[in-house]
Image (cartoon, rainbow, N blue to C red; front, side, top):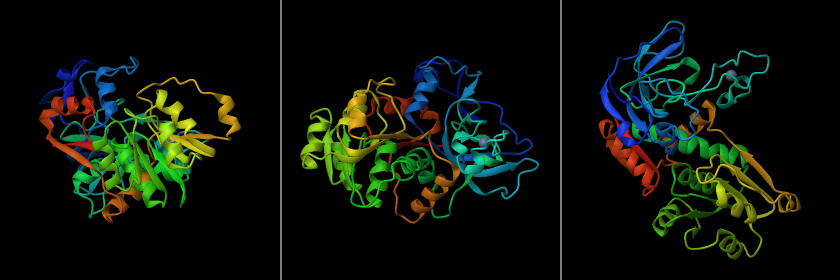
Length: 347
Ligand SMILES: [Zn+2]
């Protein structure tokens, strides 16, 4: 099969479009023929092994997101047939945890005790074919295109967990969504708006804020020009927001806590701008704040957001489409942060 392969970690020039042996579906596995591939900023971290602990087995195929059809079914897989439109779940689970305690049974397969990750622990989606085990197959509704499906999992499903499951955003609340131009951010703006909240978007450019307004944000804050705390206080009459949807980390996380109203909640899923943050715990408990988080989303949430995408209630935002062989150029665009929403590749 054709795939974008790395033989060592490093810059975008390490992404090589070449032929590599096609995997076959063993017992309990299916082989998916991918049509589209979704890119994510952490693909860049994996490519460069930024944290230095991944121990990727070379050659390796990156990629956590994609959509396609089942090409081959191994023995023991039930409920699916060749030709079914599916996508792989990126946080792979065993479906039973192999322990007395089982997060999978509680619907939290994204934090399975046998957790593994597509594109890191095994070959990912930068390829014509990807192999996954049966608990990690997500069915794509007919009404959802391959393009939208590849743009849905990380952005929409994670945002749903942040806004609805963990953030518990309700009608009439004021919600600040940081990095509103990112995949997760642009999805969180839509979901918080759908939940009946008044959305204040924050982003690093006025152009991104205009796009966020088109998705349902009532107001916008350019954090390269203005203080988030000052602007939130102006927009909320000095009260602060009820919820912050956060995925940036660093100083923006600290500012976000200060922008919260009394009893406010901060819901987070990322920390590219600073993984270690010192927090004023006096302010934290005097305001009775809550911090919650999610690590991607379970299969059930993916199915829920795909249904809403199919109904037109949520719209994945696709900025640019590249052919698979132009992966290096796609990675350069991703690194520039000069885009809004998702970057997708066609296989
Ligand atoms: Zn499990």
